[in-house]
Image (cartoon, rainbow, N blue to C red; front, side, top):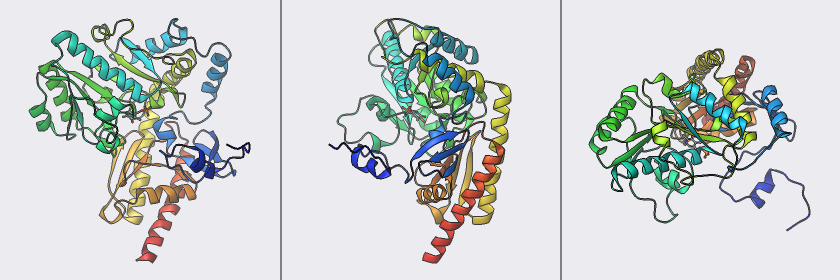
Length: 410
Ligand SMILES: *Cc1c(COP(=O)(O)O)cnc(C)c1O
């Protein structure tokens, strides 16, 4: 215990539970796609707070809602409803297949609700034996114990005791494996239309269509985890809308609140009816402050012009990566959709993604990785083109430095 409240990056190592390894600088302020650290250095933000700040930092219209709703009512508890949450539900339902929404505070909680709902529907309709949840290797669905067990990265669920039963993991994009496994015992299939954390790996359209058909055949529910791909990220409001496949349950979070915590599970009337009063719940979920902000986010991002802009920036960003690849020969693949883009390092650079991330930060650009081999870009959907250009100039410098240092070392 100490009374000295001076803090620096080093303080993190002394006072925080060490589950994260944050960058060496401390962000202090942001505007649009720029961030300034506590030393006053500026960064171009291609990380977007991990695909969250889709309208950039300090968006004036969101600030207005924050101040207005913030001076009216923050939280009231689910013994009461409130107008912002009802408006948000109506807006999301007008944009999607869904008739019903359940609001939570995060992606994991939205998925937790989705998985519990699927189990409950199967239990009510067919009985306790129909409990199998089919998920895919390398998938990511959150860090609560149920969602992390459903996620396809065993290292995240090991060492916490017995994992919930009835979960199987199949290879992603492998329809034959899905056909061989999904059956009468399957209650739900949960899939990301693009695996985000797992390496920015898009699902093949035939894979998603095949999962839909198998779910229909065997009375299982299809859950799309759109926590990362949703809210305009792929250039469509939800990624499913460009796949020809409609899920039974969709989960959304990340960009939904542009950084104010909120998540949601969306579904249809006949499924929602299985969650009766008291069957599931939350304290903060659906609070008026989060809902008012998300309502404005959804209003702004569902604008077709904004979504066209995402697809234009996507082409530009991919072209920049292709340009870097011509200069440096780093990538074996550049993939993804909209502004969720991954660049996979080739054999010569495997395992070095973190080095590029660190070098980029030193040159004033923030980006992400998706595993040790993939650079990931998930910037604001309204990133100014000048910032995109300047950001790639900086990333180019950073890459030149890493490539130069590696050549020297060889
Ligand atoms: C980030 C993410 C989650 C978890 O969301 P949290 O808000 O961190 O709980 C779940 N699914 C996918 C696909 C994600 O990208």
